[in-house]
Amino acid sequence: MNGVLAIARCDLQRLLQDRSGLIWTFLMPVVFAAFFGLAFTGGSDPTTARAYLTVVDEDQGPLARRLVTALEAGQLELNVVAPDQRPAKPVRTLVIPAGFSRRVLAGETVTLRLEKEPETNEPAALVAQARIVGAIARLLADLVAASTAGDGTLSPEALERLDAGDDLVRVEARYAGRVQRVPSGFRHSLPGNAVMFVMLIALTHGAGSLAGERRNGTLRRLATAPLSRAEILGGKLAGRLGIALVQITFFVLTALAARAFFGFDVGDDPLGLWLVLAVYALTVAPLGLLFGGLIRDPDHAANAGALTTLGMAGLGGCWWPIEVVPEAMQRLALLLPTGWAMRALHQVVAFGNGLAAAVPSLLVLAAFAALFAAVAVRTLRLT
Image (tube, rainbow, N blue to C red; front, side):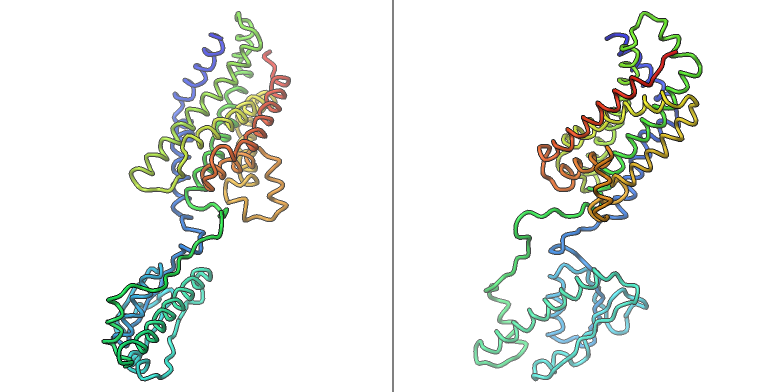
């Protein structure tokens, strides 16, 4: 056991002395996760979705103000401007025409105009339209209530009297039951980049350093030491696993710091995140031995590892949620350890179902680990 730990410690120290290796192990995963997490942050829940809307109030009357108030309560990023302050190129604009309040109180039909840029985001435009319809419905309901209260006179004063009381009916929008949303923002970026970079280090630094030891005779000299073949292979495997666990621990601690200081949504189960990634590390560590044992040239081994990582990351759902790709691609992801790792991490991080929901995926990852370890042990030659 002492020999296993000594070999593993030596491999870890070699990484810590490699400046490029340190950057790709610790810095780049954080940079990638932060960039794509911020770039794709946005709720996929239509009950809480927000959209930008510019309101040009040409009326400046009491009913226009009530309509704007209703829009402000409708989860819109609202920008209310006067006619002479209209932006040059707003994304979408609602125009309240002059005379709106007077004409509505007189019982006349009034048309509100919603203007959109041709390249506007269509889902956001639909959200804005739904919020506008809701605000108009609220205004109409107030008008009906005001006309039936008191002396039946419809006036701004009658509307103001309505505000003194509580709403008789309130609408609460929520899902009927439990919903599984498509992961987005940090809840996808964090697991995706963790899975990709843990494999990348195992298949580049891990495979390349092992191939270099085969070529320069380090493994051959180890074989002459008072160590069994199992101890040597166990030490090499433990070294790659140790590197992955240190990398995972740093990544999770950084995510917790980002949540504490910047409010990033990185999930509610950091321990579950760490445990899933630890099982995944057991899966990819033997792959580093396998690549280093099959390819003798260190550069070729590292290049093959990088290409393999990128392919498995893309097909396994690290770059985009696997839920958005065709069903055939989703089935293909289940042939890869990255696909099962993302499946488990989504259960823990994105969907909040807890570690128990990830157990089937973890068992599959354990089977991959056993398979890769068996093949690596059979293919790696010390002499």
